[in-house]
Image 1 (cartoon, rainbow, N blue to C red):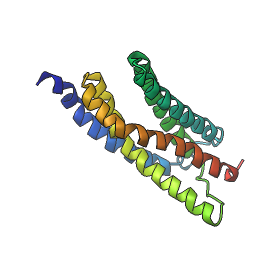
Image 2 (cartoon, helix red, strand yellow):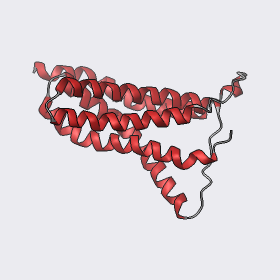
Image 3 (tube, rainbow, N blue to C red):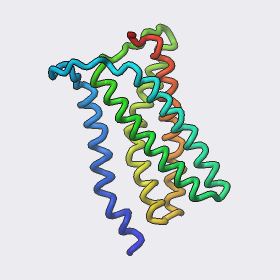
Image 4 (cartoon, rainbow, N blue to C red):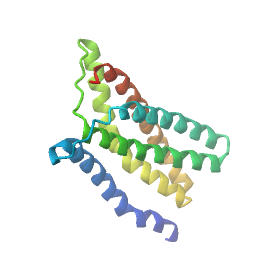
Length: 180
Protein backbone atom coordinates (compact mmCIF):
# COMPACT_ATOMS: atom_id res chain seq x y z
CA UNK A 1 0.00 0.00 0.00
CA UNK A 2 2.92 2.34 0.75
CA UNK A 3 4.11 2.53 -2.87
CA UNK A 4 0.77 4.03 -3.99
CA UNK A 5 0.92 6.79 -1.37
CA UNK A 6 2.99 9.22 -3.46
CA UNK A 7 0.63 8.84 -6.40
CA UNK A 8 -2.37 9.24 -4.12
CA UNK A 9 -0.81 12.24 -2.44
CA UNK A 10 -0.38 14.01 -5.78
CA UNK A 11 -3.62 12.89 -7.46
CA UNK A 12 -5.77 15.80 -6.24
CA UNK A 13 -2.95 18.24 -6.99
CA UNK A 14 -2.66 16.88 -10.55
CA UNK A 15 -6.41 17.20 -11.10
CA UNK A 16 -6.51 20.76 -9.74
CA UNK A 17 -3.45 21.92 -11.72
CA UNK A 18 -4.75 20.23 -14.88
CA UNK A 19 -7.94 22.27 -14.61
CA UNK A 20 -6.55 25.53 -13.21
CA UNK A 21 -3.74 26.04 -15.75
CA UNK A 22 -5.93 25.96 -18.90
CA UNK A 23 -8.66 28.04 -17.22
CA UNK A 24 -6.21 30.68 -15.96
CA UNK A 25 -4.39 30.80 -19.31
CA UNK A 26 -7.72 31.21 -21.13
CA UNK A 27 -8.74 34.03 -18.77
CA UNK A 28 -5.35 35.77 -18.92
CA UNK A 29 -5.29 35.39 -22.71
CA UNK A 30 -8.24 37.80 -22.78
CA UNK A 31 -6.78 40.21 -20.20
CA UNK A 32 -4.86 43.14 -21.62
CA UNK A 33 -2.79 45.17 -19.17
CA UNK A 34 -3.58 48.37 -21.09
CA UNK A 35 -7.28 47.87 -20.20
CA UNK A 36 -6.28 48.26 -16.54
CA UNK A 37 -4.36 51.48 -17.11
CA UNK A 38 -0.91 49.93 -17.45
CA UNK A 39 0.90 51.58 -20.32
CA UNK A 40 3.16 48.69 -21.31
CA UNK A 41 4.75 48.11 -24.67
CA UNK A 42 3.86 44.80 -26.31
CA UNK A 43 6.47 42.19 -25.47
CA UNK A 44 6.89 41.52 -29.19
CA UNK A 45 10.26 39.83 -28.70
CA UNK A 46 8.69 36.94 -26.75
CA UNK A 47 7.11 34.80 -29.50
CA UNK A 48 10.50 34.01 -31.04
CA UNK A 49 11.86 33.15 -27.59
CA UNK A 50 8.98 30.93 -26.59
CA UNK A 51 9.02 29.21 -30.00
CA UNK A 52 12.71 28.53 -29.41
CA UNK A 53 11.81 27.23 -25.97
CA UNK A 54 9.37 24.79 -27.63
CA UNK A 55 12.10 23.70 -30.03
CA UNK A 56 14.53 23.12 -27.17
CA UNK A 57 11.86 21.15 -25.34
CA UNK A 58 11.45 18.87 -28.35
CA UNK A 59 15.21 18.31 -28.59
CA UNK A 60 15.47 17.61 -24.86
CA UNK A 61 12.55 15.16 -24.98
CA UNK A 62 14.26 13.17 -27.74
CA UNK A 63 17.59 13.31 -25.88
CA UNK A 64 15.85 12.07 -22.71
CA UNK A 65 14.40 9.05 -24.51
CA UNK A 66 17.81 8.26 -25.98
CA UNK A 67 19.37 8.62 -22.52
CA UNK A 68 16.96 6.19 -20.86
CA UNK A 69 17.28 3.68 -23.73
CA UNK A 70 21.04 3.77 -23.10
CA UNK A 71 20.56 3.16 -19.37
CA UNK A 72 21.45 6.71 -18.30
CA UNK A 73 18.68 7.17 -15.74
CA UNK A 74 20.16 10.23 -13.98
CA UNK A 75 20.69 12.05 -17.30
CA UNK A 76 17.14 11.10 -18.33
CA UNK A 77 15.80 12.53 -15.06
CA UNK A 78 17.76 15.78 -15.50
CA UNK A 79 16.61 16.17 -19.09
CA UNK A 80 12.97 15.53 -18.21
CA UNK A 81 13.14 18.05 -15.36
CA UNK A 82 14.61 20.54 -17.83
CA UNK A 83 11.80 19.84 -20.31
CA UNK A 84 9.23 20.55 -17.60
CA UNK A 85 11.03 23.76 -16.61
CA UNK A 86 11.12 24.89 -20.24
CA UNK A 87 7.41 24.17 -20.59
CA UNK A 88 6.66 26.27 -17.52
CA UNK A 89 8.88 29.08 -18.88
CA UNK A 90 7.02 28.86 -22.19
CA UNK A 91 3.70 29.20 -20.42
CA UNK A 92 4.82 32.29 -18.48
CA UNK A 93 6.17 33.97 -21.62
CA UNK A 94 3.09 33.04 -23.64
CA UNK A 95 0.75 34.59 -21.09
CA UNK A 96 2.97 37.68 -20.68
CA UNK A 97 3.01 38.24 -24.44
CA UNK A 98 -0.74 37.89 -24.81
CA UNK A 99 -1.38 40.22 -21.86
CA UNK A 100 0.59 42.96 -23.61
CA UNK A 101 -0.22 42.40 -27.30
CA UNK A 102 -3.26 41.87 -29.46
CA UNK A 103 -3.63 38.46 -31.06
CA UNK A 104 -2.15 38.11 -34.51
CA UNK A 105 -4.44 36.94 -37.29
CA UNK A 106 -3.11 34.32 -39.68
CA UNK A 107 -3.02 35.84 -43.16
CA UNK A 108 -2.43 32.76 -45.27
CA UNK A 109 -5.03 31.71 -47.83
CA UNK A 110 -6.10 28.48 -49.45
CA UNK A 111 -4.96 25.05 -48.26
CA UNK A 112 -2.21 26.47 -46.02
CA UNK A 113 -4.92 28.17 -43.94
CA UNK A 114 -6.52 24.78 -43.21
CA UNK A 115 -3.12 23.28 -42.38
CA UNK A 116 -2.38 26.18 -40.01
CA UNK A 117 -5.70 25.92 -38.18
CA UNK A 118 -5.47 22.12 -37.98
CA UNK A 119 -2.01 22.40 -36.41
CA UNK A 120 -3.09 25.25 -34.11
CA UNK A 121 -6.24 23.51 -32.88
CA UNK A 122 -4.55 20.14 -32.31
CA UNK A 123 -1.63 21.94 -30.63
CA UNK A 124 -3.98 23.74 -28.22
CA UNK A 125 -6.09 20.67 -27.40
CA UNK A 126 -3.07 18.44 -26.86
CA UNK A 127 -1.26 21.13 -24.84
CA UNK A 128 -4.15 20.93 -22.39
CA UNK A 129 -4.20 17.12 -22.42
CA UNK A 130 -0.45 16.90 -21.84
CA UNK A 131 -0.57 18.67 -18.46
CA UNK A 132 -1.94 15.74 -16.42
CA UNK A 133 -0.01 13.21 -18.52
CA UNK A 134 3.33 14.87 -17.76
CA UNK A 135 2.52 15.20 -14.08
CA UNK A 136 1.34 11.59 -13.73
CA UNK A 137 4.38 10.34 -15.63
CA UNK A 138 6.71 12.41 -13.45
CA UNK A 139 5.09 11.34 -10.17
CA UNK A 140 5.30 7.69 -11.16
CA UNK A 141 9.02 8.13 -11.73
CA UNK A 142 9.40 9.89 -8.37
CA UNK A 143 7.51 7.02 -6.74
CA UNK A 144 9.92 4.58 -8.44
CA UNK A 145 6.98 2.85 -10.13
CA UNK A 146 8.99 2.48 -13.29
CA UNK A 147 6.74 -0.15 -14.89
CA UNK A 148 3.75 2.21 -14.64
CA UNK A 149 5.98 5.20 -15.52
CA UNK A 150 7.18 3.52 -18.71
CA UNK A 151 3.63 2.55 -19.70
CA UNK A 152 2.28 6.12 -19.49
CA UNK A 153 5.50 7.65 -20.85
CA UNK A 154 4.83 5.80 -24.11
CA UNK A 155 1.66 7.91 -24.38
CA UNK A 156 3.03 11.12 -22.89
CA UNK A 157 6.20 11.34 -24.99
CA UNK A 158 4.67 11.47 -28.51
CA UNK A 159 1.95 13.88 -27.44
CA UNK A 160 4.41 16.20 -25.68
CA UNK A 161 6.78 16.02 -28.65
CA UNK A 162 3.91 16.87 -31.01
CA UNK A 163 2.94 19.86 -28.86
CA UNK A 164 6.53 21.12 -28.74
CA UNK A 165 7.14 20.69 -32.49
CA UNK A 166 3.78 22.13 -33.57
CA UNK A 167 4.42 25.11 -31.30
CA UNK A 168 7.46 25.92 -33.43
CA UNK A 169 5.63 25.23 -36.70
CA UNK A 170 2.66 27.41 -35.71
CA UNK A 171 5.06 30.22 -34.77
CA UNK A 172 6.91 29.94 -38.10
CA UNK A 173 3.62 30.00 -40.00
CA UNK A 174 2.20 33.05 -38.20
CA UNK A 175 5.41 35.03 -37.69
CA UNK A 176 5.17 36.86 -41.07
CA UNK A 177 1.90 38.37 -39.87
CA UNK A 178 3.14 39.82 -36.58
CA UNK A 179 2.81 43.61 -36.45
CA UNK A 180 6.13 45.21 -35.61
